[in-house]
Image (cartoon, rainbow, N blue to C red; front, side, top):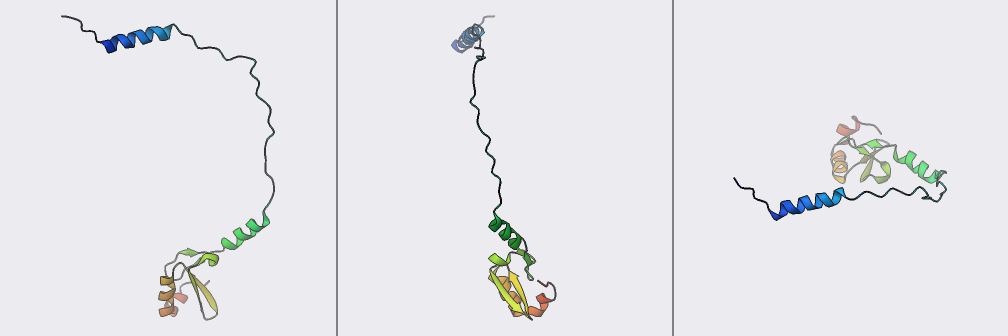
Length: 108
């Protein structure tokens, strides 16, 4: 029964012995970190607030039921004095073909 030693095993043992002999250096106690002023942004952007209120008033596409922002709607159609907003021109075309079917389902 013989013992076979490879060079890889010897390298691992040699490296482990070297690591045992080293000691980590302690952090110095006199390290100074420069003081910095906190940066805090306080203020209001009334234009953004106004836009948020307007854009949050979504309408429902009467054909597919999707929420639609009137400012970015793909199309809108007025029917019986009510403006309907659509997510796509396809929904607007479907509505225009039979407005009474969809107008009774959703009122904007």
